Amino acid sequence: MKLIVGLGNPGDVYTRTRHNIGRRLIEFIASREKVKLSSKKSQQASLAAVSWDGEVVYLAHLLTYMNLSGEAVAALVKYWKIDPAIDLLIAVDDVALPFGKVRLRGEGSAGGHNGLASIETFLGTRDYPRLRIGIGSLGNAERDEGDFSDEPLRDYVLSPFKAAEEKKMKELLECGEAACRAWALEPLSRAMSRVNAAGF
Image (cartoon, rainbow, N blue to C red):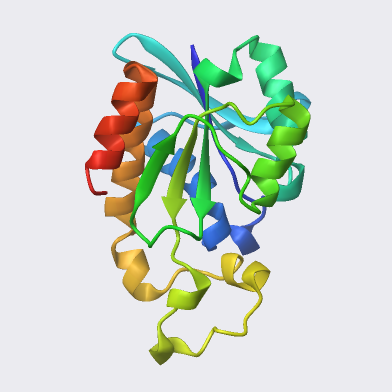
């Protein structure tokens, strides 16, 4: 079995924010697969199971806030007795990538991301795959919607996507879903080559 966790914050106020793109991807996949995410308070997550070519894949988004992601992810890893380096994928927002780009990595640093830093702390390793989803950088915010050059990064990632970005959201989420399928069904090196070379 495989486990894909989309990071984000709970609550309606965060639903459409940049920081919640990982959680939004999980909800998108669940909707496409016509499965319902069920809240499991004991596991601090909402979960649903799908089958991709015979591989059971659990989809999850957490009931905790972003900076507490590690405790919940570690609890899921322990509950399902999985190897994070092989069977866990974290879907996460990335300000270093332009909006619309996705990158699959087998490991890496937290890069200043509080959710990834928390996961690294609780798992005791940074060796777990992550799907980085570009949300656009603070410096690249369009001037016609205001000058964000002095806006703190925290405020930026907790801001909603622009209307023009929302128009392209379905395409981005479809790319994210394809990347998740590649990770679940192919050797990691092959999935990374295909996803990262696709120019998503």
